Length: 435
Image (cartoon, rainbow, N blue to C red; front, side, top):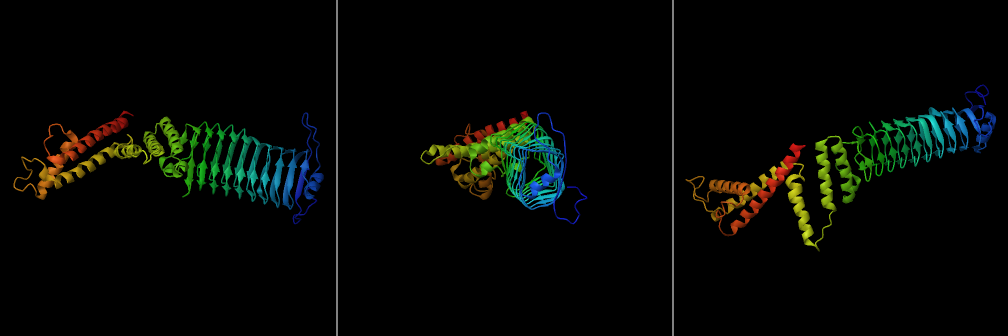
């Protein structure tokens, strides 16, 4: 059907086609434009034919289906499909969607081969399926809107895949997609889960300017080049998942992941431990040592929480408590020497208060304030501080007879704590300096 045979006010869809020569070994016949139109008008599928420069415009009230067809330079523009638009086992060469196109039903490209495609201003109200499709040349999507789930299960992109300013209102399922080049998202919005689980991307993955509202799942993904996540926007419920991912060049900041790791939030601390281990390795390879310290600290915290502890075996509870008190609070598992200093100050002041309250239990040959009584506030404070600092820094060597009776117990405890904290501070400080 030509443009001249149809007025601009006629709502009947336009279908344009011109013939092409058969490829080598291809026995599929060419289909005239009139026959294509009659099949579409009758709601029947177009099957096993070759069509060149097919143009679809206007409104299509029934389902439009192409099966095992070769469609060369197809253009779909200013069109509305009231039903489904489905391509099954087709070969599409340089298809263009735009001007815009609305599919109120489902859109399917199952098991299709698509070369040098461009999708512009495409709106799909139903679900979109690209399962098992192969894209060549380039797969380009711009200003497309997907109202329901989008599935790219086991699709293969032998080219660069690019999505620009697209909106995904439900799951964007890119699980097990295989991309021989790179996968780029720019300025897209993901209102539901974005699933890259099990995907393979040989070159860069980039999501600059994209907003994620729910789960960003990269579990079991094999990402062989840089993964750019520092430029993303995060909604209040956005979470990450990195379980068993193969990735050495993740570019993500600690504040983006802090409090957003799905496994950690759900109490799966052993899995979270391995995910933080992955982030630690990435930061180490990029020489981001402060970020590496953060990832290592979160790794150790989840390792502690993953250790089973029960009151039936009280020593496991004691061990976990000591781990938390001395290694976590004491020095941040060797990543934060300032914690050791802060804890030392707290211990010194705490024991100084105890010693000052029981100042009568100490031998004091010389008072800091000779004109005051030993029980006066001034002498209590000074004796408590001097004694606490001495015990904390020197232990009990040379001052074993400083206290009387049971007051020797806190003196021994503080001397042990002081020795431990000195060791933790040296380890943490050396770790910072050596690197």
